[in-house]
Length: 357
Image 1 (cartoon, rainbow, N blue to C red):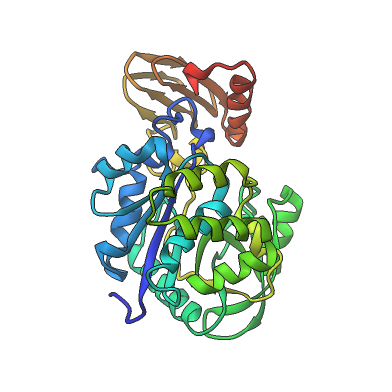
Image 2 (tube, rainbow, N blue to C red):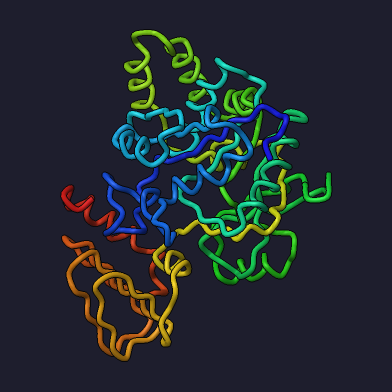
């Protein structure tokens, strides 16, 4: 199903998955966890499902230098770019574009998070093919919108504008994660989509956008470009990343650019697996809607998630509770508050509990 358009699949794998603490840690983050009965990791599944669109030589993973060996184990055929320190998606995409510019500045780069789930890979590839064609047709910054099925407050939203094709539109505006009331309004309006965090654009187009909207990042890209392939490459990239602002591509570029287009996804069963609650959706439940993983005893529980990494987890008479035992830490919270788990990680950071991060 490879397209005739030269395209590179850039998989962004620099995150730490703090909402999956205590299982997800800085040394072994969320993208290396599995939601598959086969045991394949999220990052492996991401790479495998887009291979029909390109070749192994055009799969590029941007990751933290701490995870280089893990990435090579999970996706051995991919090329790697290792960031010296995390600086969010704008810096990661800029570095990838700077590297790809040396090879083919007019090729299309498709940016994909490493830790999302998809149940219909064929429809994903169909959607990405349309995004690639749209990106190649001009100086377009193309994003993928997911038709919402519920008023979800965990996702950013995209409001579509003028129709330009069967499933493609100009972007009217991006919206950040809404309140429950506003999320319901978006759902009822019918012209709002979940922001999938997936993008397609020509290398030259995203570099132009960086120059226009993030001039300091552009200067760093130029300095890194000059150093690529020289003995000072690692030193220069390290220096630049030390200075760069940590900001997402959405905040840095997409919300300011006027050449943003959106492809409405052919339904491909997308989930950003953004919390323990979302993780649980990929596993079977017992008769009382509990998800049980590992050495677990459950009596008279309802709608709960019990996860053991080794030692016994036993629960009696609880409802809508999440209990995650990693062996050296236990996390307990109501299911309706799983999006807040990162608050615990922030507290651990404040207490300098590096052993648990």
